[in-house]
Image 1 (cartoon, rainbow, N blue to C red):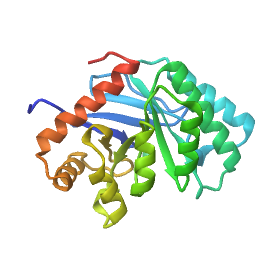
Image 2: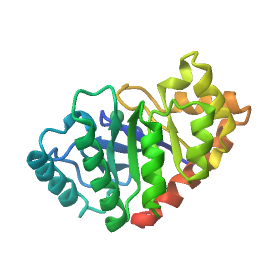
Image 3: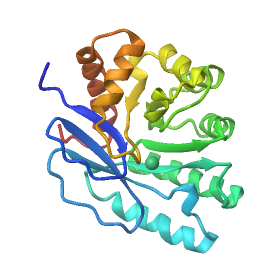
Length: 228
Ligand SMILES: [Zn+2]
C-alpha cells in the first residue's frame, strides 16, 4: 500500500515529487512537457480569461488542439464566476462549449465555480453529461453539496479545509471518500498535507484515504486514457 502515490488533482505550479502524481493546469497556448508517468495536464478557458466572442472561440480551438495529447486528461479549469468582471453570459457560453467538448473528447471537466453553484447544477441537469464533473477548490454548503452529489458530480478540496469555515468541513465530512479529491491549486505546497487533514476530519487512516483517492483517480482517468 505504501507504493500508492498521492494525487494532486489541480495544481498551477509544476510539482516534482516522487510520491505524487499531478494534474497541472495550463491555459490555452501555454506549452506543456512530455509525459513522464507523473505529470498529467488539464487545459481549459478560465472564466477570468474570457474576452470577446471571437477571441474566446480562438482560445477554445487551442483547448481542443491540446486535447490531442493523451496526458492532457481533463478540460479545465473552466466554469462560472460571479465575482469575475467578465461578461456572465459569455462565461456561460464558453463553459457550455467546454462541457460539450468534454463529452466529445471523453475527458472529465475540472470546474471553477464562484457563487454560481445553482447555474452549474442547472447546466448539469440540462446536459446529462457522461463525463465526470469535478468541482475544484470546493467550498459549497451541505444543501448544494447534496444536490450536486445526487447528479454524480465529484469534489476536490484544498486550502479551504484549513480555514475554520464550518460549511466546507460539514460538506467534506458528509461526502463519501469515493466522491473526493485533493488539490494544492495555486499554493506551492505538498498535497500530502490535505490528505493528512482530510484523514483527520474523516477519522480514518491516511493510507486508506490514499488508496480510495487513487482508485477514484484511476476510475476517471481510465475514461479518457489508459496510461496506468
Ligand atoms: Zn486553479
